[in-house]
Amino acid sequence: MHHLKIKKKIALSFSMIFAIVWQIVAQTGGESVKTGYEVTAEGAWCWFADPRAIHHENPKKNINKSYIGYIDVHGNIKAMQYDFVKKQQVEILVRSWFQPDDHDNPTFLVLPDDRVMIFYSRHSDERCFYYRITQKPGDIATLGEEKRLETDHNTTYPSAFILADDPDHIYLCWRGIKWHPTIAKLSLPDKAGEVKFAGGPYQMVQSTGARPYVKYASNGKDKIYMAYTTGHPDNENPNYLYFSYVDISKMTLCDITTKELSDIAAGPFQVNKTPEFIQRHPYTVVDSPSKRDWVWQVAIDKQGFPVIAFVRISADKKSHEYYYGRWTGKDWQKTFLVNGGGHFHQTPNLEMCYSGGMAIDPDNTDVVYCSAPVEGSHGNVYEIIKLRLDAEGKIIEREEITRNSTHNNIRPYVLQNSQNSGLRLTWMHGNYYDWIVSRSRPGYPTGIYADFPGFQGAQKESHELIFEGQEFRGKLPDQFTVRVKIQLDSIAYKGDVLKIGELSYAIDSGSLKPEISYRGKKWVGQNKLATSDSWLRMERGPDGKWHTPEKIRELDFVLVYDKGVCFTYINGLLDQQAGVGKIQRKNITVSSPDHKLQAMSIYKGASVNGK
Image 1 (tube, rainbow, N blue to C red):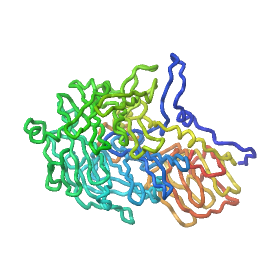
Image 2 (image 1 turned 180 degrees about the vertical axis):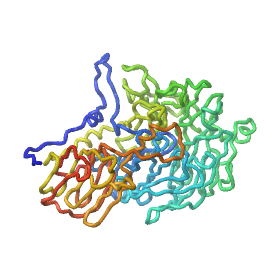
Image 3 (image 1 turned 90 degrees about the vertical axis):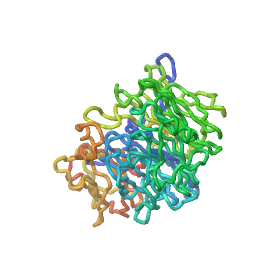
Image 4 (image 1 turned 120 degrees about the horizontal axis):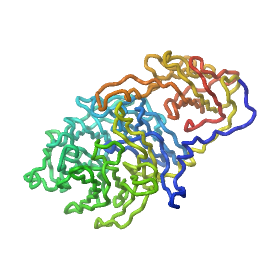
């Protein structure tokens, strides 16, 4: 126990150093390497729950931020927020101990008052959605308590919209009733953060296939566009691709020519692959191949016409051909882009229809990003390729976004409303074995990468080190950061993890949730100090169960005190904040009474990202 007299700086961790690498001249054949910038080392997403990333600006409220959501193999639902005004980056723990399945990635919705709503759900084995809403406009570091929206059917893939013609409601689309496209009108959140069904849920389409797959987009005013297949291409050969839109003014389903197909509340529109159906509803069918189609995105061009990214998969599932479809005003113009190889992942004979993926730039729809295998310094690796098309659908420009990568770059996604932002393109990077963690396979141990060099500046934050040791006694500065590495007692999983005078951070033994306490007031956390690593001992597949939480044993914990507010970080993820007010900082003791403290560092200043 002693004070250090010398000043030190927080060193960049190896992960930060790797994160800032974008373009390095490699020694292998003198060829350059382009890898992108690391958003997170652990994260993944499916491609049917959107928007998984957005950009939001409101100059009047000084909001200029990007949000990217994902889930890791430990069952942590997470989100990264980058503030372009403050040039600050923080990673938030939205929900711990969730089903470790990449179908469960979170999606975002900006409310009329600029608060951000985050939706998430399990993979079709639970009858509810979860959501959290920020307490402050535009700041997902201020998430409120977790809420549930109950349904009478299983849920997955939430996609939410607020449209100008009905700004008082949320339109939520998902895979729900009978595993088919479902829509409901929700109330805006009340003062308690509760939303209720104001209309529906309604099943929109009934297919001859068991599980139609849908991508949604809106015109922001009165329509929700949807491109969908008959079913899953593993089970459907051929598998047709369709297009319809929802007119919210009448809650009807229409084809591209505005012909009404159904009254949504009266029952679903019947879709099939027969010649009679195609003759009767020719403008609903985008592609009717002799192959297996799957859809990647639908967007709206500057004329208000839909554009669709889709893939044709061969009968043996070994060849994936990427296509771009555009409505010309008369018909669907379809352009072959590139061959996407076969399934991208490391597990043979599993999910053979999993392509590397495609993304249309929603703000410039003649630009498409494709993940396709390219021979490079490290063999045949999936790289991100940018293609630009002309008005006739011909490819006029090709650019390598990544090059000579060591691992696959897959499932690209362009942030919505990011046309004036430096952070536009994101993707998954790394090895991938399965969409769920199980005893058979470790799931999806990928990271999320992006095209934004600003992360480099955001991660260079440093503060003066004022103490290093096992126990501190003395005076703390007005703003301080305490970082401790603690071995938690997994048997007596309770009690004070960290005490700073009268301020305590403890574990509740019943809920496994952390609690901040100060002078008779208590702030209970939303997330358990636990992971879903127990799934590594379970059978593969959604089973509707909440398996035993795996208690965190090695905790890298950070507590930041800044202007009366405490922020806590669990292994680098922002978890809690509590407005404790002015605290006593003179002649206090900082220690870990009930668990084994391995190291402690105290810094002058408030560390924004908890690093």
